[in-house]
Amino acid sequence: MNTLLSALLALVALGVAWVGFSDYLRIQNNIANSRDQLVEAEASLAQVKYDEQGNVVDADRSRYQRAMSMMQIHTDSIRGSRAQVPNVYPFVGGGLLAFLVFTVMAVRSTRRS
Image 1 (cartoon, rainbow, N blue to C red):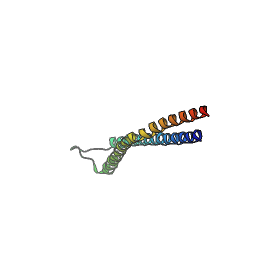
Image 2: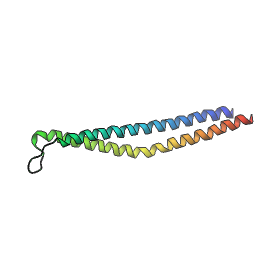
Image 3: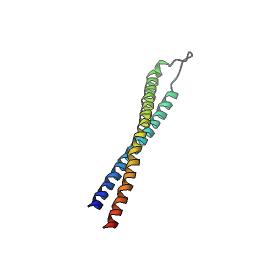
Image 4: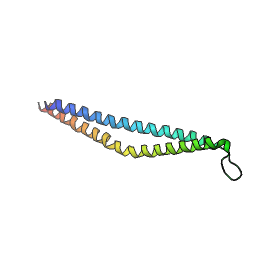
C-alpha cells in the first residue's frame, strides 16, 4: 500500500513539475513573440518622416501612433512576462524534489516487503 501511494504521489509531483515547466515555456514564447512585434514596430517607426522642426508629418501620424502604441503594449507584455517567471520556479523545483522523494520512498518500501 505504501509503495502504491508513494508511486502515485511521485506521479502527481511529476505532473506539478510538468505544469510549471510548460508554463515557463509559454512565458518564454510570449516574450519571444513580443520581441518580434517590437522589432516590427521599430521598423515601422523608422519609416516615419519628420518635418524641419522634428514633428511627424501628417501623412505618417497614424503610422507613428500605431508603432508607438505597439511598442508600449509589447514592452509592458515583456515586463509582465518577466515578472511571472519567478512564480514558476517553485512549481518546477518543488515538483521535481517531491518526485525524487516519493520515488525513493516507493523504492525503499518495495525493498522492505
